[in-house]
Image (cartoon, rainbow, N blue to C red; front, side, top):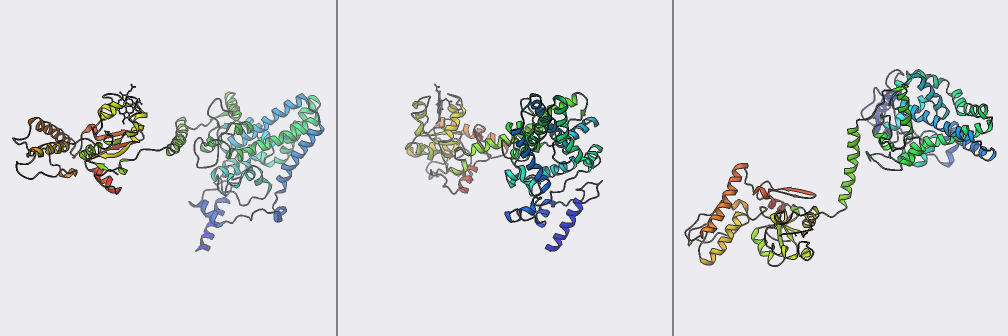
Length: 544
Ligand code: HEM
């Protein structure tokens, strides 16, 4: 089975990677390509001291070590000429842009179209940056984007800062980069030309041309070679390498933190504007790396200038609306993480459900106030209340929702938040129910020997907090005081009207939806809160 899988994998990978040149390299790619290749194709053993000489990639190793040595030698043996200094700086940008505007955004990502003269110019300048041919560079870069942070990424940041900056070029690749299609580049005449003549182009634009300009221009041949040639090349090299290393470590994940790319001004500064790398990995076909005018992206400015003079066209940019969505997603994630560090009120399902009667009884022993259907213990706040202690004590054992929500004072968000932290229970039904009124009447009448919902002489019904037991208003008797009967009947009528309106056994609309900052709780059916209490294992009708 394993052998078969291995066979299939090898065949699929070979198919994918060695497809005919004019076809898409990934035309036959299996759906599980990444995991299959990683599982079945073993990487080369790790580089160790004992095998290092065999593992070194000598061409790039020498190129990357000899240039800084020669540049340092030049620095100590050559005097600076003002014009050479300016030329070195200018040629740094020219060759840097050859990579960023040419190799990277034009060819690797097809972020815009360039006229033939601009393409040849960028190919020449890119050759002067000595980083391999467009063909080789773009293939590796497409694999980097496609397999970011996996072992199929040729310069995966997950292998460490040194590996992604330099290490991957100094030793033989530990495994073949993942398949990436470059069939479009194979057809490009400029790329074909540069690939064919890459070595002479590299030597000329890397060292000959900068030396010639300084030598013929102001007779500084030596400075031209060491500074505009060697020293400039060291800077261009490490500028590009920083995109693979620093841009995956330093800064913000502005649009997505699933992978390592980050946005940072400093990286942008040292990479000719490639430092907004989180943006770039999200929107790779965008000709910009930086969307804001104040962000440093000379490559974008160069492409825009080329567009203005008619040498570039079809500049691609990702829809602004979608860019904003990416930013918002991360902002929301951060806000959520911040919120998780805060203390939040107990939710209704973690509080006991208390009947109105029990609430009133308990209020005699401690300062309890009902607001929004929650019972709050305000003892810690009595003396702190900006509106005065008397306003709170006046509402103990009562429902203060109306007063709290603007009847007396329309409290701030802060007050709502503070209040929610004082919750100790949920009032059954959310507000004082008609049956509570009824129970009160019962209690009062019990003293006088009459009942509001039973014929005189029959035993009083127990006051129950089970909603299902509530069957409407009492039948008035001759003994019931008329005012009480009317109040109960009115409350009952209201309840009935509402029940028939929405077809449910619901509660007063006013109390139906409680919106507390950070939480919205909606009671859809009477008795639901009780279920919450049961789930939580708390006892119904008892304070914790
Ligand atoms: C436990 C419940 C309560 C809490 C946590 C609370 C909290 C606060 C807070 C924080 C303020 C400052 C202004 C603001 O943030 O909005 C305030 C002001 C006030 N509250 Fe309350 N309050 C409660 C209950 C009540 C009740 C039941 C009443 C009225 C019967 C009331 C009446 C007032 C008044 C009139 C002010 C304005 C004071 C002023 O600026 O002169 N509060 N309350």
